[in-house]
Length: 239
Image 1: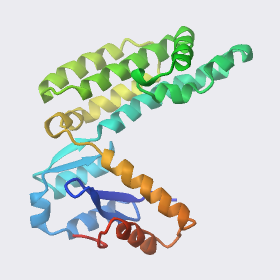
Image 2 (image 1 turned 135 degrees about the vertical axis):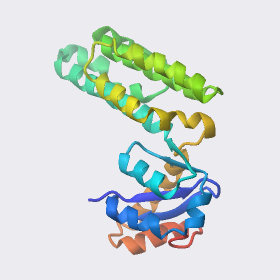
Image 3 (image 1 turned 120 degrees about the vertical axis):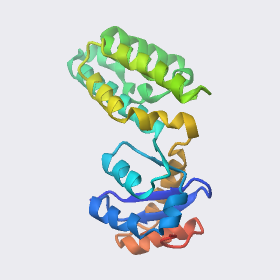
Image 4 (image 1 turned 60 degrees about the horizontal axis):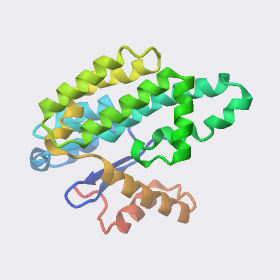
């Protein structure tokens, strides 16, 4: 089915509205309906890496700093690692494949949160694939930069060095991450000015999933969105 669009207010920590489609024409119509004064007073707009969202944010929220969510940056890199992981698990001998069990989930974890068993499996994967090793180390290094309280320009320098070094990784999977970072670099680095992410949406999404399960799917979108907004004590279409 179509993707819905969830818009949240970072100040109130609540959903602002839920839209039934990511269609550009529909989004354009929706954002144009928001009063110009409200749009002009919006200070920041955090979103994931989709050019249509950025295009519309620039058009309708001219004073807002556009921030690409840091967690989507990491998600993009994790997808690259997972591509190589899948290739590895297809070619490795069956008698050794048990050592790679749950590797997909291990790669997602931060280094400091790994158990001893998980560390051993990760080290085995590193022995089997230099690409996985280098991309995992890149993931941890970029994450460490995001955790630092540093300026945007300092972050630009540190991440740019890491991305340039990533070009030396002899694994085709990394190419998509490098291209994506180069495309969205300025918006990614805006995080270091505002330190905002879409982490708020993860909590809201989890509550939406629970509502959806309890409602057995709830195919009527108007009723579904109204129920979600009601659960957060919001009014529908709070413009």
